[in-house]
Amino acid sequence: MSKKVALVTGAGQGIGKAIAERLAKDGFAVAVLARHADKLNEVVAEIEANGGEAFAVTADVAKRDEVFAAVDQVVDHYGDLNVMVNNAGVAPTTPIDTVTPDDLDYVYGINVGGTIWGIQAAHAAFKKLGHPGKIINATSQAGVVGNPNLTVYSSSKFAIRGITQVVARELAEEGTTVNAFAPGIVKTPMMYDIAHQVGKNAGKSDEWGMQTFAKDIALGRLSEPEEVASAVAFLAGPDSDYITGQTLEVDGGMQFH
Ligand SMILES: NC(=O)C1=CN([C@@H]2O[C@H](COP(=O)(O)OP(=O)(O)OC[C@H]3O[C@@H](n4cnc5c(N)ncnc54)[C@H](O)[C@@H]3O)[C@@H](O)[C@H]2O)C=CC1
Ligand SMILES: CC(=O)C(C)=O
Image (cartoon, rainbow, N blue to C red; front, side, top):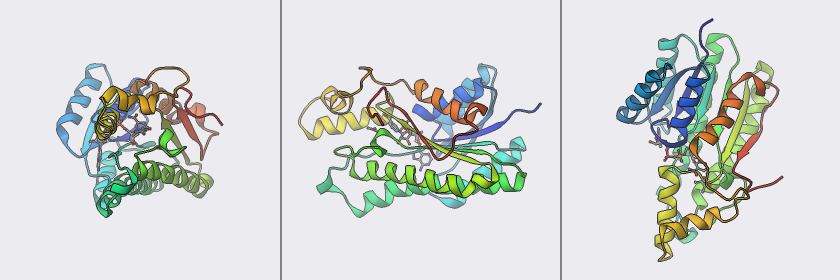
């Protein structure tokens, strides 16, 4: 039987890279997407060295045409698409008084626009291929509860939970599921950058900046990207077939509902 195909955006580093590696281990043929090919080629090489199958496509997820072209390339290459992981995101530190129109355009263009274009392009492919699929979107614990210093980012991640619920209802009839994952404080370049900025703005250390986010993690430690990838693997696989419209929180116990 041929492999199921997953496309992961923002897969050059951090959580996206871990997701791509995990899905390849789980038997998916994986397409990895980012703006530049260099890091993607390294991810492809690593996956192939471990016996997996991977293919790199470049696109800026904020640009609808580029996302559609990338999805078409993946379908041409593998002949199928089953899972779309809209993981790419950006998170500049934006204390409320500093927020500019450019900040909104930049963050909403990538985080919100990129998720919507990814969903549209994947759905168009599922329709053309004549089968349903699974759409998985990256939100955040900061999309479940407001985080200080992250007005623009945090609100964009609230939007992603909203989009996930709306589209889950719209596509349910076709059998396509739409879910989100909400990481906590994960050891990636994004999180180290935020910790640095928040520390710097307060005249304190990076570790102090990190602790402003990490102090309430019940399990008492930061997350590895692979721990988020495990949850995404569940949402991408058959064990989650009866789950849609949900946000799976993978935060070591930051939020309880
Ligand atoms: N690191 C953390 O603690 C948390 C991260 N998240 C979310 O998880 C996702 C992944 O985050 P990290 O791996 O930490 O971030 P990261 O910054 O380490 O990696 C993000 C990747 O997305 C790519 N990317 C950014 N803008 C893009 C664009 N316009 N087009 C294509 N690719 C683009 C980057 O090049 C990079 O490869 C993001 O959506 C983030 O908001 C959510 C909660 C916590
Ligand atoms: C970057 C992020 O999503 C945080 C701090 O939750």
